[in-house]
Length: 413
Ligand SMILES: Cc1cc2nc3c(=O)[nH]c(=O)nc-3n(C[C@H](O)[C@H](O)[C@H](O)COP(=O)(O)OP(=O)(O)OC[C@H]3O[C@@H](n4cnc5c(N)ncnc54)[C@H](O)[C@@H]3O)c2cc1C
Image (cartoon, rainbow, N blue to C red; front, side, top):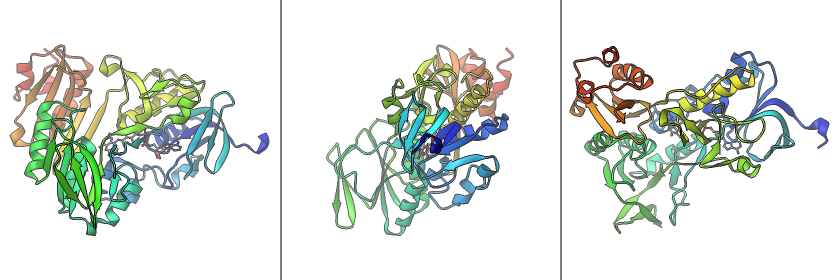
């Protein structure tokens, strides 16, 4: 292709998920008048992922209601969508990318917003067509298409996605076994109080939890599958769902010379080490101010959105630093969990309210200061608690636990 024919954009966004879409939206909202294109592997317009393991899995939400914006929005805002195309190469010097269906696209600024691939189960038999991840719409459509042939579901991974899926399959009347390698669920993201609460809730709802073990092999036997666990026990299932994390999709950027390891490294304005290349969302490894500056990746809608805003501001020449306070939610059965802050490396947990009442909060402390809250059915604690985190408040744990005092009244002291 001659140079004149090479399409060229002021901003090229790779990935049309939460971060990519928000970056385009934000640029236009901030008055950016240059050309914007968003290239993404998926065929669909940008859509919400959280319902995939929640309402969409159980058939309670239509896909059309998951679109981040109506289909016409993108063209109306002069945002070019290049769907069903995967970027495989970045040339940070020529400032071009190569993608399926688009051999060469030139950019002035590149925003890398590719999230991650569902981590495949590392065991023989994991490539069976009855083994799924829940990451994209097509995963859930494929699961739903075979539901009438499924009585027994095995879920591997006791993080939020695995637990939400377990709740969904129970709602659909399936027999559910959940295997988690750690000795508790939510081991990576929450403390022991919350983990024990959710484990008890899932057991009460009929989920068989197998903790401290893992799947070592999957074998097809007739119409079903048999998974052999590390403890040598065997579990028969018609469908297996793996929710064991993601592998950040940063290969082309790293090959182009960007620094990274667990994702791609970005600075406080989400700039990678390549000129004019930003990275945002699940794939961006950053020094998070709410984790004492520790270099981490955060997998949440909040993180993708707020990083997109920082990049848009940087592109239009405004000062911006990524310092947003993390928040997250999870719906399982009738329980609504809202979390704020990061509980990484906490050294104490204070429980407010009684978990048996199914309405309580866990307040995480690190070196005596409030760093995070997990609130189950407690929107007020969630809203008021974030102020304590922002203030890095140091409050007597006995007071924090006293449910007769509102969290908002604790700051004044
Ligand atoms: C089932 C599920 C439930 C979740 N529930 C919650 C929740 O309750 N609350 C919450 O805060 N977060 C939740 N999350 C996490 C949240 O959805 C992610 O953190 C968020 O989507 C990250 O946005 P992103 O833009 O980084 O990546 P994504 O939204 O994953 O978008 C990345 C896009 O890039 C595309 N892509 C990847 N590589 C390439 C390439 N080389 N070329 C072109 N395109 C590419 C992908 O196909 C994808 O469309 C959930 C995620 C899942 C999967």
